Length: 458
Image 1 (cartoon, rainbow, N blue to C red):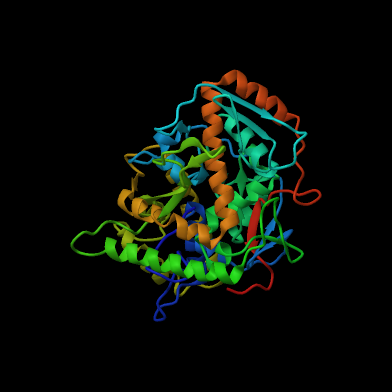
Image 2 (image 1 turned 90 degrees about the vertical axis):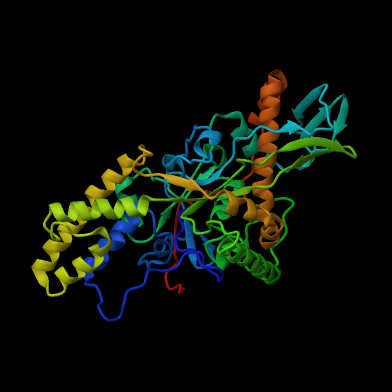
């Protein structure tokens, strides 16, 4: 998820762009910068709040509509330990990001695994079908099928990303039209497509964008979509817990900006992941215990500065601005150039601006593979301080946090079984493969398009 201009508090992490009242940009200039923002995915809030003209809604999610169009499956296979090292790879954080887990759990220090058995027992009630034995003793591992089955399939594969907002539809031209209209394209790992768990992971990624995304759940005809074991959210309570979280996050930011022991807090984006999270398992009172909380990996990059430089260079090539124009003055130069244009002149200018943006976009796409041009920095201290707020975030939306945490924890435990007990894992997956996962609604499809509902106001 890309976000920019982080305030100390308030109900939004992204601030809308502002223009001075003394010089209002022309239509063509405004479109140029909107086009640029969309192309570089550096203005997420503007994308989310753009008015739309047609309703695509299947589900309601605050002011947004969620609909399904045929989309590509997310298929990221790179190791997170490399992509999310202390020097993050811009090709991953800037193109995928989202929610990503690939860690392997380990036995807790006081716990030794001498033997392990695991089966999927379809004859048992839902929530108890993970039949686990550790050191010859049956161990309770309660998890419902709507989570168990997709998590096991995810752990069985080689992919490392669960969900992204930087998705692609099968119909590329339609996707471009939707993106220009302010929509976001959602992609899921194949294991989470058309599952309620996939819907929860999507919400985890956008939970910090706005209050409306944080405290509720998607609805169908006014009713919350709930899985087995979940309760309807207490929205009023969640809103109160959100305020507590926001106050504590503001304190962290204030400490970071202090002169004595300051640390960077302004970030471009984050990845929700298990990087730098020690995931341990043991047995207590006959139950499996897995520890570790999902972590926000905050990072800051120089892509916006590089993109502005590329745009300026392309604008100079096309004669839109004078040679030698400084990138910091590009907006002002374009406003001055377009101030007196009307009719065909303005259309021609606009066409050139879009061509410059397209050329700059292609250059930035290529540059993302070259860390010497486009680079990112991991905000380690801020990420560590924010990780201490995990319980506060859990209280903001328990169903979303619990589903995401189970994906991380059980996924890590399953990878341990897969690596250390491959025969047991293979037999377990045969049972999982034959299991029937019931959708939360007849014909349910995970949403792949999110945009503002018709008539909704923000």
